Image (cartoon, rainbow, N blue to C red; front, side):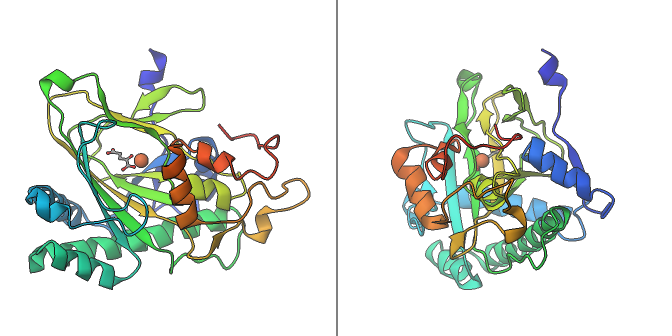
Length: 308
Ligand SMILES: O=C(O)CCC(=O)C(=O)O
Ligand SMILES: [Fe+2]
């Protein structure tokens, strides 16, 4: 199939401002890209140290993993379930360094595990600042800052086996976040993103790079200018798969577009909302592929080109 030869666009973090308009364009057309050359902020060694810490967290006894309870809807530990039987996930909600400390104490983490989580959280936060700052610049928005926005890690383990090849690893969804930075498995594939024609295309492993996704908050914040990428994970081989998703969630107050993105030709699309309420809405309606955001459309007959 022709779509299998397709691949997501690549953004080089060291090639700005030259790639500024490309960044905006791929966020309008795809809502996702591969980020390369981010090592000055998130190094290969920190990525692999974090991966080994993640593996050790999954090896904890179930009763300890269950101590990681929800801080916001869906942010805690989730064992494999009926809907995603191959998928085990561990959320870590972070609005301050204290949250990491509290969680590490609950999990009896070693000083090395704690230190690695803190270093990784700092690096990812810096990457969020870089990427979202460049995106805001590209959109002509002045004075944008997300320094205080909370974020969340979700570390994922996929129990892939011979007999599960061909079945779903994680259901079709969009991320609820503004922006997601995904450290996918360096060896085991399975992630697929929906392209503009509605076809799923594989995102094959590419070590030392990251996948960046735009989520529902990104679409709402940009007043519909940027699109959310729909994605899923499929079991393609009999191998455990690990990934680390870091979500920059949204402002602590209301999600609203900057004034530069609202004008007569682009009237406000969504009612202002609070991120945590939106998460609850997604969970209560079970609308996980961006449809929950449509419930907040001010006039559902208006949707801009570039929207899927
Ligand atoms: O494991 C992956 O590659 C993707 C995970 C994902 O989509 C998520 O955690 O939201
Ligand atoms: Fe996702």
